[in-house]
Image 1 (tube, helix red, strand yellow):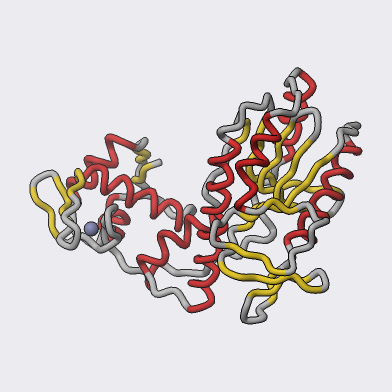
Image 2: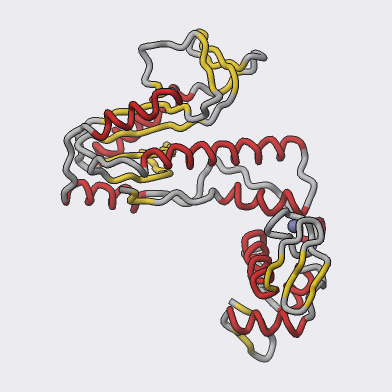
Length: 300
Ligand SMILES: [Zn+2]
C-alpha cells in the first residue's frame, strides 16, 4: 500500500514551465531531460509496487538526514524487512568495468550501487538513532526495457527490467503483516522527510526574459485566439474554458514567482494581455481570497 505519494520534484515543475517560456541553454536542457527521464522511471517502478499484494507500507521519494549527511531514497518499503530501491531509467547499452558504469561511448555515469550503499548505511545509522534494528534489503532497479548491461556482475543487488515481474512475484510471497510498529516507523520517517533538497539546482530566470501568454495545455503553443468563453489553440485545436486556462496560468506564475503578489495587472501581463482585465479580475475574485486595503489589492 502506498503510504507516502511521490510528487513531481520542484526542479522538474519549474523546467516544465520554463522550457515553454524561455530558451533553455544546452546544459539546462540536459538537466531537464535527465530529471524528466528519472521521474518517469520512478513512476514506472511505482506501477509495479502499486500492484503488490504483499502487506506493506510504501514510502516514495524520501529525503532524510543522518548526522550531517543528507540522502535520498527513491522507494522504501516497510514489511518485516525494510526494502530500499535506487531506481534508474538508463536506456541503451552500458558496460560494467572495475566498479564503474560506462555508456557505449565510454561516458561514465555515477554508479548507482555506490549511491545505494551510501543510502543503506545512512539509513541504518538513522534507524539505530531511533532504536530500530530491522534489517535492510537494498537493490538498484533498472526499469527501462531498452537497457542492457554488459559484463554485469552477478553478485550485486541489481534488478533488471526483465526480472521485475518475477521479483515482484517473489516479494508477494514473503509472509508479512503490517501492525502498529510498522505504521509508527512509517510515520516517523515521513516526519523526518526534508522538503528542500541540497542537491537541487534550481534554474535561474527573471520575469522580464520570459515569454508572456497562455500556453495551450494540449501542445504547449501560445494561444492567440479567444472566442466567447474559450481559449482556442490554432495549432492543435484544443479548446479550454478561459477560467481553467487562467487558473492554470496563475499556478505557473505562483510556481515561478512565489514571492510576487497576485494582482489583476500582474496576471493580465503574465497572460500576455490576451484576456480582458475585467474578466481576469472576476476569475481571481471567485477563486482566490481578495485582500484589499488602502495601499494594496491582491489575491491569495
Ligand atoms: Zn495546442
